[in-house]
Amino acid sequence: MTPFLLLDPSALASYKTAYQKGSAAEAKQVKTLLSKADQALQHGPYTVTSKQRVPPSGDKHDYISQAPYWWPDPSKPDGKPYLQKDGLVNPETKALKDDENLAAMSHDVKDLALGYYFSSNEQYAAHAAKLLRTWFLDPATRMNPNLNFGQGIPGTNDGRSFGIIESRHLVYIPDALALLSGSKSVSPALVKDLKVWYAQYTQWLTTSKIGQEEGQNKNNHGTFHDVQVVDFALFIGNKDLARKTLETHTLPRLPVQFAADGSQPLELARTRPWNYVSMNLQGWLQLAVLAPQAGVDLWHYTSPRAAA
Image 1 (spheres, helix red, strand yellow):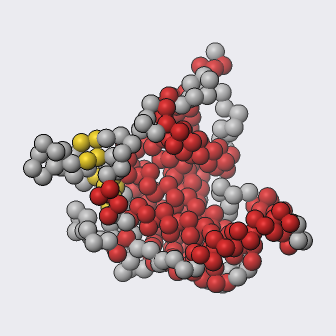
Image 2: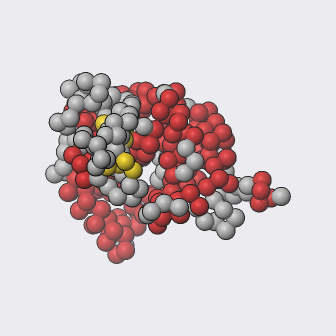
Image 3: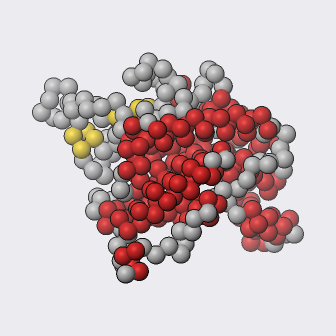
């Protein structure tokens, strides 16, 4: 049975019991949840191979995206190299759908898994399994386990470490598999194959130049690097990697990212500070939930500076 990582199984079980007993509050929420699962039944399957643009590798199985805040240089005939306008999204980046499809697949699988957990409707599980096989496993449609071409800047590079934040949605998949435990559509073989993909992606994330650079980024990008490595490591059973990442990357980040008054100077300096402050806090919340499973306590951490 796949363990829960970000979700609390005891809280879920209590909520499910209350729902089954007819509690009005829980019934209302589950009705909304099942509506989202019904909508997800109509979506997908998603794949990286459906895009029109071929990545620099020549392989459509490779994920590709373009840096959102970079625009053509009006003084150059071809606009290259592009110039940065922080906070302003270049609409041409929307033509590349891998980012959008990865996020949609992850959230649909989560919604379907929650729907199955509360209803035991095998349709939800079957569609979730189809979405997972199409994105991760089927030879014709699978995504190669790397982000070598994430957030490239035309005229400057084919991919950057900053693209790795786009795969943060993949943390929903392990918990979805836990919710789907018991379904005939989600076999042990499927879970095993998904763990192989996640192990390969984690290997790339922790050993590639781009992956290691993301681990050194100081702001929210560094936070979500850690979220992914810790979550994926726990999913594939590598608790040592999860603990090492928390101790060598995450703990040293706290005094860098948070001032004594709790503010986040690196995020507040951005052109869309509320967006980045709230997003970064979400990452830290996920890390705090994951950390005890690797023997690290973030909830009660005090920086050396504060203790002095």
